Picture 1 (cartoon, rainbow, N blue to C red):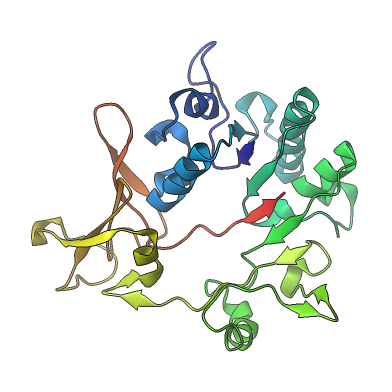
Picture 2 (picture 1 turned 90 degrees about the horizontal axis):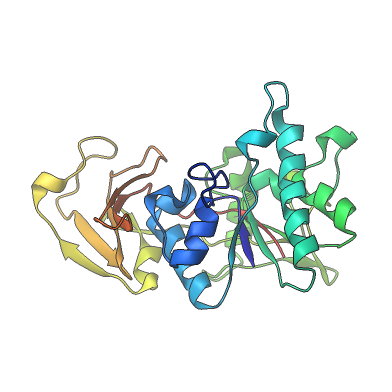
Length: 270
């Protein structure tokens, strides 16, 4: 199974399927599948996962599990409860859980109510998961940049897991709270776009100047549109605010998408 916070988990109508269930039935990402799947790279990752045989599972807190006073603890518990329901129904299934940021923390809570989803799931299931952090050392976090630059100077341009005395080295606020920490190389740009987009097999194509973004980074004379395995991203400046927008074809499939031109790095529970 591929359980992802990104997949919508509320029924689309009375008695109807959830967006995650509809994704499993149809086999393709729609605009209604979820928020992060509006990002074309994320959607492409989901398509690849489906091709590999993963079954998409939604585990996000539903509207029926939400109360006005619940807050973060209620959400963490709801996520763990939803995952446990699936684990009980499919005890032999292989599990890959994609989470956002702090949900991956499997320990270190100073009070029980502060426990994050992974810690709650570990306690409820008796399973010690392999938890992986990819967000703490990031160019997006100003306080992490000094340590990140030191690490990147030793990485030869490739993602890495650092070891100390043959044990995984975990830096920053997640120390002792995850099992592994993946550090990514410094981001490079080509014509205002992250250079790693080219590694996905797409081809840069010129487009009309009238399609240039009106907000965000200043328009680039070499503005290009990149196709990536059936989904499109527009930039630079098409969404550098960090928000995602989308268009769709008549069938509701993800069509021309504008996104922030960056990966959505998240934690993972395996």
